[in-house]
Structures are given as C-alpha cells and as structure tokens.
Image 1 (cartoon, helix red, strand yellow):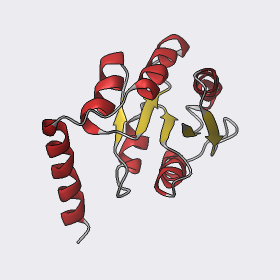
Image 2 (image 1 turned 90 degrees about the vertical axis):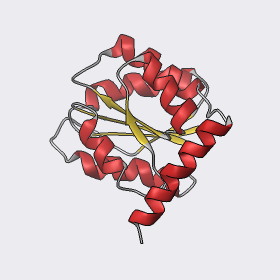
Image 3 (image 1 turned 90 degrees about the horizontal axis):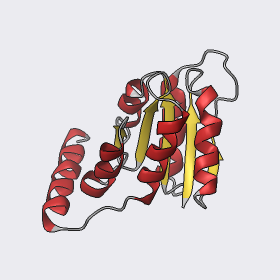
Length: 150
C-alpha cells in the first residue's frame, strides 16, 4: 500500500519511527511534513494527508499531533476521509474492520515508540469486513456525510 504520513511539530520526533514501521511492513511512504520541530498548525498537515488519500495517491494515511485529536477533527472535515484516534491495538484494528477508517491519528504525547509500532502494524494489516452489518453502518455514515454537504 501507499501510505501518506504527516505530523505537526509535536509529532515530529515520533514520525521517523512510524516511517520505519511502515517501510518494514513492505509499504511505501509519502511524507508530507512537517520536517522540523518548528511550531506549525496540525490542520495543515491533516489536510495534506487527507488529500493524498482523496486524490488516490495514498491508500491510507497516518497523522501525528500532540494528542491525535486535533488532526482527527481536521481530517474528518474532508468528505471521504474517515479518521480515528487510536491509542490501543483493539481500536487500531476495529476502526478499519468495522468502520473502514482510512486515516489513523496518533497522539505523540500520549504514546511512545513501542506502542506506536504495534498500532501502525495493526492498522496496516486490518481490512474492512464486508459483513452486511458493517456495510450497512458504513452506508449510513456515508449518507450522513452526503446530507451534511448538501
């Protein structure tokens, strides 16, 4: 898979570990920044990652900010992006399997390199389950998104 990767200054230190995990799992990484610990605004980088997905340049994305929440809120404003904050392995798998999440948001001030490895691996290995109940629920989410854009 092609994975878009982005962060704000709070996520910068952990971003290289995420890149390493993605590449070791056999995937390609497109790093959209930031490229230093100089303060920047997380919505800018959440949008860059989301656009990579929406433009078909990336299959999934990963963002890092301080808590993961801000980047998640920003990314979810984009039609077609389903972002989730995950700080445990169960949620990292379930969000893809049940909700077809395409953008993982991580809080670099919440987790460290050991757990980030397991979270990223789990997120990348997970696949959406096409059982009727999950498809039905996803279709309801897509309908809400459509109505909100009208």
